Amino acid sequence: MSGTGQPVLEARGVVMRFGGLTALSGFDLTLHSGELVGLIGPNGAGKTTAFNALTGVYAPTEGDVEVAGRRVNGMRPHQICELGVARTFQNVRLFKELSAFDNVRIACHAGSRSGFTSAWMLTPTHDAEERRIAARAEEFLSVMELSPRRDELARNLPYGEQRRLEIARALATGPKVLCLDEPAAGMNASEKVALLELIRRVRDQFQLAILVIEHDMRLVMGVSERMLVLDHGVTIAQGAPEAVRQDPKVIEAYLGDGKLRLRPPREAGTGVP
Amino acid sequence: MERARLVLRSVAPFLVALPVLWFVQGSLASYTSFVAINIAVNVILAVSLNVVNGFTGQFSIGHAAFMAVGAYTAALVTTGLESLAIPGVPAAVSGQAVFLVALAVGMLAASVAGLVVGIPTLRLRGDYLAIVTLGFGEIIRVIIENTRVLGQATGISGLPACTNVVWAGMGVVLTVVMARRLLQSTQGRALLAIREDEVAAEAMGVDTVGWKVRAFVISAAFAGLAGALLVHKIQLVTPRMFTFVKSMEVVVMVVLGGMGSITGSIVAAAVLTIALETLQAADQYRMVIFSMLLIVLMLTRPSGLFGTREIWDVLPRWRRRRAPGEAP
Ligand SMILES: Nc1ncnc2c1ncn2[C@@H]1O[C@H](COP(=O)(O)OP(=O)(O)OP(=O)(O)O)[C@@H](O)[C@H]1O
Ligand SMILES: [Mg+2]
Picture 1 (cartoon, each protein chain N blue to C red):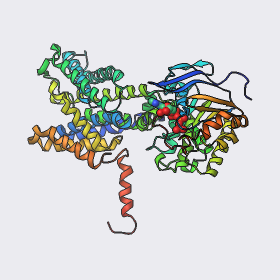
Picture 2 (spheres, rainbow over the protein chains, first blue to last red):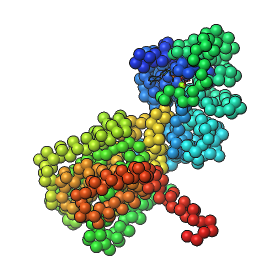
Picture 3 (cartoon, chains in turn red, cyan):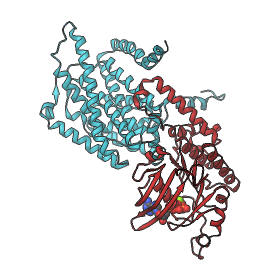
């Protein structure tokens, strides 16, 4: 599957600097439709920064990002989303005071071009549109096994379901590429395995390219075909899970030189999306 | 047949409201109808500000300026076309037609002002946005105060008394229908998403700046409608009617009723208008009273009376609490 046709997402030499800090340097990535790639690395390695640079939250300081062959540097996140890149957030950013159903419905608007006027006049096109959106939202809730929670406010859902709702919402935008930032964080081992299985099923069903950040290296190895390891913003290894695991640079980054970097993964990133 | 049904559904609120308002109009004493029109104007203001402050979560405090733009524009239209007589049409009818045009033009002018203010400011967030809308509001008022055709500080007097309970009531119905249908549509949900989490909304494909500007423009248009209706009741328009105090009044109504709650805005606007009418003597303390009210509210019930819910979401709860077996 991989390596054929045009890549759906391509990053070339992406650099992301914040003042004097280089959070990401020379980041290269080629994603093809149907691929599931794991992005790993210790705390502060630049994984979330890479997501932010790909999805337009930050404009890359240097380098190019292309979505289906189109250069997207400097585009706003909603434009990049429309081109087919959807994401979830490390710190779960749901529309808290809205129902699960509405959270997903909001993401379904892509393809709807009607303005306020049709909503005010209650035109037949508006009705049809609302019905189409509702049906689509129900479908994605059911894919993520959230149908029974349809009318629950997002903030009242248990943590694991909030994470799944975020994925349902991202899927509803109709992406070609799905970027998941630690989707299994805060879950226990068996929940994690179930979730990653679910993610793999979603990939097969929708023929997506998925890029997933996960702290548990063993876990992500089990599901991804390819891994990419970041440390201090630099890609230190890339390739098949087995090869990556045995890479001395990776072992050093993870097990370290006995320095403080062997903390348990932080739950709440760096306070940025 | 089906088409007729759809058209009917879309205009039903207006068809129902018109005869009712006509009836009410005939049965109200002149002072009561004056208060009723005041309430209507404030309901229009509060509900329209709620589109920006409540639905979209952007804190604008310059609503009075858009009210002024609508009021002055409509005043220019009605005074300019007063002598106009369409041959064969009774003066009363042509006067009403002119007023309808004046209201529409007033709304249009206010929405243009909303666009001009909205585009540069809506990239800002939170406190910054509040301060800048306040600043723009004052600028618009100062411009009016220094424009000769608008009568400078003395304003324009002798406007035709066009606004009655029917016009004001129809204005309320139009505003409420606009807000309600908006809330129940994808377009409205995009606004709610912006309120809930702007970064996430943007990442889910919502053009946050575009929708914020649109919400702002709509809100301004309806503020313009309120202004136009008000000045054609009191037959006078002056810049003093549209100061920061008026903007704050509307903000208090929205906050009191609950950000995002349409019925909350309606109730709060009505209650505060009546309170202000009965406390005429305390007029010079208006600002103090409102500031105090706002502070107490923010401390005790920051989400307003109804939060983002509507009155009917809250009422059954009271009933339910009482329900199991106990006497009320
Ligand atoms: N907006 C920003 N401004 C300044 N520095 C930032 C910003 N965003 C990220 N950084 C810095 O960039 C570095 C990489 O952060 P990033 O969040 O990408 O790490 P991560 O790999 O996602 O880590 P974690 O596993 O903890 O989520 C960190 O040192 C962080 O402090
Ligand atoms: Mg991170």
